[in-house]
Image 1 (cartoon, one colour):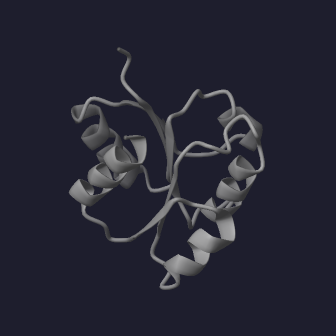
Image 2 (tube, rainbow, N blue to C red):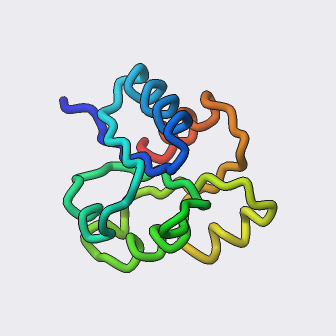
Length: 119
């Protein structure tokens, strides 16, 4: 059985690499995206889950979530939004994220969240 594919989108390269390492160690295939070139390209990644940083310079994470939720081919895929913004619940309602995690977050909590969403 092929392992689940997680797409992590974060402009913080250090945090992106840490998340990637933890998820790979847990047995997931990971595509790490530092800069989003196009939203359309996300549709072709065959992801089982997206982990998306909210505060990115070119396009905010909640816009990415809204876009993904609007596309029938990927609308069912779990979305985890990561944010340092104090109104996390508002963001998840606004964009359709399944879970919002507050920065700084515990990597074990991230891993447990992904496992719960995929099972």
